[in-house]
Length: 168
Image (cartoon, rainbow, N blue to C red; front, side):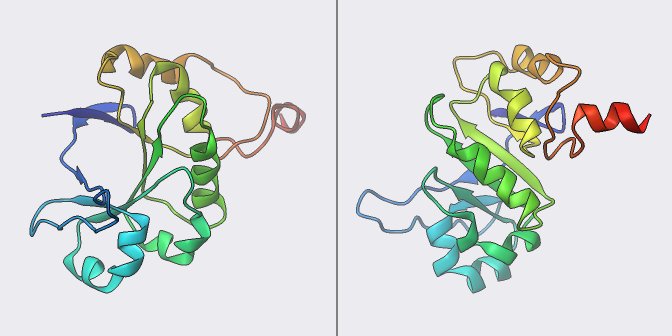
């Protein structure tokens, strides 16, 4: 079974990520098990999917978090795709979901995710990571401890270092 990192623990990845067909048709949703559907499918089938339970939503880099809006707060799992290391739009999506739309559940990064990106993803509110298949997940986990302090504010640390030092 594939693995992922959730809250600094390596666990089994039991959720099924569904993708739309090339013609845009939505994927069939299995009767059981946790599924992660594309944002467009969730918006089109929200009532049925919420009644089913065990559903998460995933964002492509060009999806807009405001389309999900306040519904984000009611979900337990949102995933964000990082198709390439050079595409940073997912960082903004994660931060917006946490800070503007009140999402408190599992925020999962998948795609081109590896050790060097984990610290920055955590600063934007991500707490779950599907590591690239060609990378060692145990080694990637160590990336969460690469830095012990940061100057700037973030989702993980809302107060910048100069304010934290002044307060102490």
